[in-house]
Figure (cartoon, rainbow over the protein chains, first blue to last red):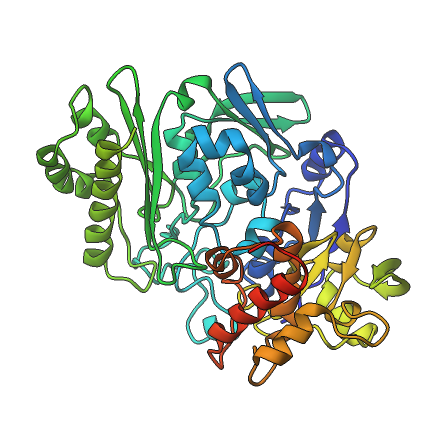
Length: 323
Length: 158
């Protein structure tokens, strides 16, 4: 399947990249390419210009600093989970990064690109000829959504593996634009809208992920259910972090909404409680209240609802028996 | 806009005229005649287009050729030396790690990347890392055995 034609730019610096993006709002950023180029082959995205970040070599690193970790946005997923500190102290991130696609995708795909991936939908992630059997959906440039018959709302689902793991690790991201950099909570970059899932300003690029020191002071894990265990997006996924010192928990879910979701009611319920089998069994009904499932994948809502409960309970049981 | 780029493929330098939307796979097969690398799904899901880029297993269908400038690319044609098969190729033949053969170049390239990184890779590790290479004849058992056999030949401690 041929890629559509596009103009190619390969800036040498972040400032130059930001300037190009400001100048050409319709341009798309290319990192590892394993998400964008597939969508372009499907003609779901047809940007007139692609701005490659491959020339920015100084964004590939995993550095421990002040007890926490700073990860360059262009660091391949493989390098992230192979990092000894990440593997030992931040297992949720290591497990999530190593569960993305296949080994090839983990080699080519970057952590920043993974966070900024497009939302997914069974009506949208298809070849153009497949989609041509019905009117174009809102996400692909049309006027309606095939998932819910409402105009101008896109219900495609955020299916990233890494985002929930980073959310429970309380990660922040550095966004770089023309006027410098700002550091914001990771959660704040997700809009919750299927059509434009990211809330970056024009000309802004996600350049770094910052994981604070207290993230390493706790148990963490990521659980994923996929059609193929070897290479697939999650049907649903759940990450858990449990503090070693203050009784706090963080839980984040993926593929259950248009953005990765912090399960705050569940976190409140678990606060200062020792995890016991009774507690674990009680979370099922709470998980159901947090999620906003839509028929955007081939799996039924009831199946996904049961699965996410099983994953959260599995993560809690692991924490119960774990560290 | 088309531009002339220089690609280092199997230690040969090729100057080719490419557009930004030409993938490395298209250039290898259609411009350089290196048809050992196979076009399967062309969407990064099957692994049959695997090539080595600076020693790592890449999906050439998802890499614009312009992004491969300055990298060392190795395809299945570049593995053997002087007409001799590479130990991995030899093992695939001996063990019978192929049926129709379409996935084989991608399998061998991925196996090369695995054994370069992890000479004594365990069966579990080989399975995990080769999961992105699909064989529709379903001959996986022999493929894993072939990689293990090559690992022994190549001196990996098991």
